[in-house]
Image 1 (cartoon, helix red, strand yellow):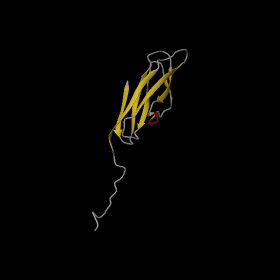
Image 2 (spheres, rainbow, N blue to C red):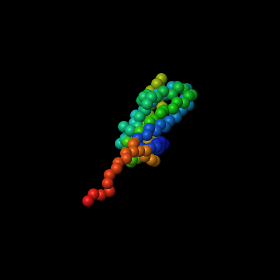
Image 3 (cartoon, rainbow, N blue to C red):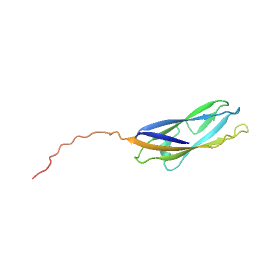
Image 4 (tube, rainbow, N blue to C red):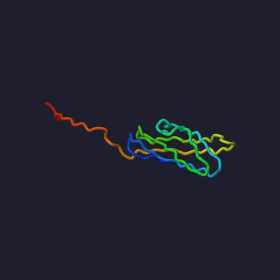
Length: 116
């Protein structure tokens, strides 16, 4: 599955990934961001995710654009063994697109058009 982050240059965009646990045992995941632009993505709540039995939880993924080119990374959720049960390893493709640019500041300058 691909998660798309769209926004202005230098803006922070937050997306949520919902994890559901249909089993009767607790699932625990270690979240890792890998790829060319992994440093531009972050997991503000930390890298460990716990999903209680028969429950669901959301993982926040933040992206702050630094460049006009699209950024790409992969979110890996690797299951930790808890009580003898392992969940499946999950992967999500993260992609960004800068839709517009907000000026940081406006400078006014006066100058003659030409001089003899």
